[in-house]
Length: 557
Image (tube, rainbow, N blue to C red):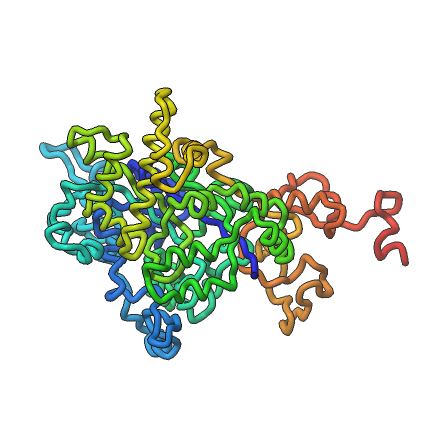
């Protein structure tokens, strides 16, 4: 057993109102640069719908993710090394700009500077790529609230898998919102697809990042990602993707999308998993067994054997405690109500979803029945083929049983807690019907209803002992590596603070503060905080008579 930690997210879809606040704040924080106008690290899709980019779930077309060979071995859908080598200068399996949308602005000068006249001036849309006039045909939320679904419905890859007569009635059946970010998978196809090794998965928390210096713009990662959450910056020629706001996580703050979410639908926390079981789980022959296989990879953070193995793997005590208090572990494994997005891609995604019960409740309420009555809800869940079938294609590779189980537990919680709040005598059969008890349901309800800030976001901070691994590359010489011109390597002649080749490019202020004030840490001077007055302490060796004199080389002069 090789224990590793993974920062993960769960979203409760019943709480998403489709306001796009998460998308806008993420856009302002991360993708407001030239060349990134069409890029949405976080986007909210109306389902049923085409998604963003359009039809990204059709892997027969886009060749994303993994598939099993006849021998039961995993291989990339887009092909192995030889195929990638043959297509390295002209990758044919890529969404074009029309699958995303051509970003635009408006001719605001026409409004601001037009002379007085009889007619009101009009600001025509201008392409941000070519600068020419254009017609707006699509955008990241073009089919918001089923807009234009009459024309686009037939192109939804999930609806194509369903019966035609069922799919054709979906507008009268249900609708929900699906926020999407990078899945930061345990078995990321984007990392395996990168010819230059620029994409990597952080060892300490599992976040998938792109080394901008190493990226050569081959765009194989765009093809390899089945969720199409890797984008190409057409100005810099580099791949970019969601970073899960790791500079914020390292200082104990939630991601921007989580912090600004109106409905507080996102949960953040650590999950401990067995890295030795990842390949086995991803290679599960039957797609419908992938959910259970991935759950088996996760480890119980309260198990003494797991705790001991985590310590041996170098996981800090407060990280183990964070995993024990993690809402992610509770929602996925303890309560078993969270489900992964498209497990059939075999990437083992780590952004999971609590399926929406609202479409079922709406149908029950519209029929004149009690939307919080347990038997009525259970019956409706069993009979409503359309939302159950669609959710199953999204979250369980077409298997309706886990979806039904999750929705029934949500329905049982709704009915049970109503009785609690009204002071009505409890029916023990409600909890027993879904394999739970009253105590478990009442423990689940605060987390799903309105979790407190510290319960919804359980984020351990970075450590002083790992601060050097989290610092800016600019703080040392990148050439000072084993075999390089500096020939120093880790702990070389320039000390432990010089020259380590690192991929992370942020400095944690908690870690920096702890290290600067720790007696055991090497002396460092932080010029970023220097106000420009007297020379900061430690910048120059102490003079005769000053504290510390005689401890360095001057003592031997």
